[in-house]
Image 1 (cartoon, rainbow, N blue to C red):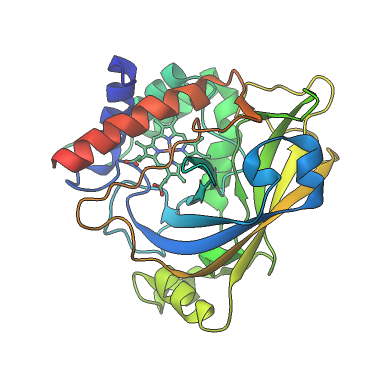
Image 2: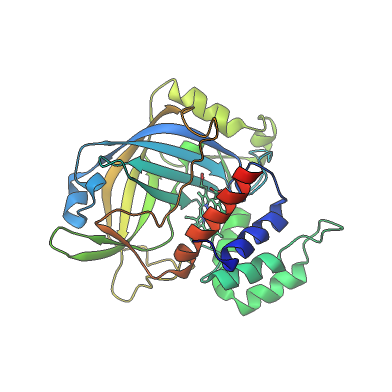
Length: 307
Ligand code: HEM
């Protein structure tokens, strides 16, 4: 359901990145790929969800740059996204979405709106009022880690060599009803790799897409899907808070991305990834940002299909 809040969240993105008819309000520039997800035996012990128990499932994966400008050069410093849609045997789908930031900017949608307002470029000069941003960060120290990560993140060598974090906590429900709160991470099997700004300056504006296309000629790009299991006292509703690094990690499957895909997002087909679309065996935490996303994505879809 979209609400006034959903519309305001999309307005905030539109005022930061401009309105680009036909494109997503965030993560506007992306590359669609075909993939297969295969669960590991450890997954079935944690969740009764069908994709964690049955045969491998077909998937679409969309890699993206974080901003809402579809023409942005890939060498612009930005968070990157992975959006995975798994096609389940009963004809439904479930989505897992991650970004390269280790934490999110805000705990609540209201704080996010206030943050976006503070960092909105002046419409006349295009400059950001650093004093306003500073005052916001003083009031909201929980936003500082995400801002620091976004500003210092190196430029990627490949979408396939980044670690992506789903940031929210989800509850995995086992066959016997046991609940395991955990967070997902997509970890590249080939390790992480970055390039310098100087190297990036010699590459084309869509070098990340070109790199993927070339990479697939030599075989699939593989990610391990890891679950970071919550420990005693870890916040389950706060995407600005990282958990201690020693938390147990369980590899629950492999995502094997085999090539670019052209079978969706054409002829009026709308592909939307929504992290609240979960099957039996997985439940949402009380994270307010997680719950706000569904409505904001619908509002963005409504705007992009109507022009
Ligand atoms: C309240 C907070 C958030 C808002 C308002 C928001 C808003 C949006 C919107 C409007 C879109 C475009 C939807 C479409 O037209 O299909 C989008 C896409 C996306 N968002 Fe968010 N987002 C939020 C939080 C997050 C978080 C926490 C993550 C990280 C896990 C994330 C990752 C992504 C990714 C990867 C995409 C691209 C999906 C695709 O490829 O279609 N977002 N977001």
